[in-house]
Image (cartoon, one colour):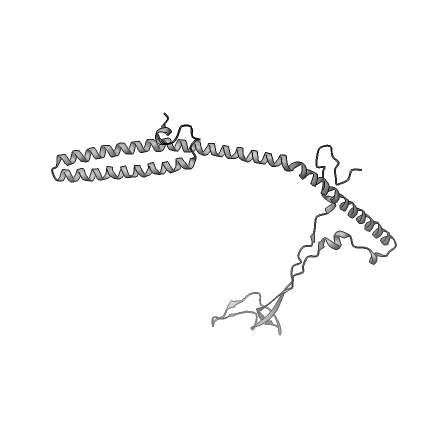
Length: 256
């Protein structure tokens, strides 16, 4: 009989392996039993001291016997907990392996059931998309050729916007200028007022200029707004649409 059979005496040997949750419950129960036994050891020590103070040898022997039994129960609980923790680690590993096996089998079933039709759908939709891209590429070429002809005829104002410029471009937003009012100290030199670049403390404690009288005026400062970057969507004709299966034809770019 294994240790686990002794720890779970009511469990049939032919039963499935113990689940980690079952073992965890038993670990908690054994830890609770160990805590109670440790409390009995402490109580026995207290009772022995009290019996000694009462000059009661019988009480001391009884306390020693109680402590001896409680310490044995602590050892038994520790041994059971150690074995249960090993079994718990094994159960966790086994359950993780079983879960991975179940996951693999489920995905294998999905691949067998869905992959072929999925690739069929891809080839069908990729073929449709390739037709759209071919039409766009042809229209882009026609716009470029027409613009070359218009430029050659000096009719630049009539040149066409490309599809991407017309529908897949957004000009960056221009932020408004920022305005704020600041106070500026000016100094008068030779009858002209200009911004004071260096001030010194006067005898009365105020700040002034040694070059002449000063004044404080309010001035408007304008900070130009920032131009946001333009936004271009990536070119749709640059994408690649490979064949869905080995031996199939590439959908886009189309092979020459």
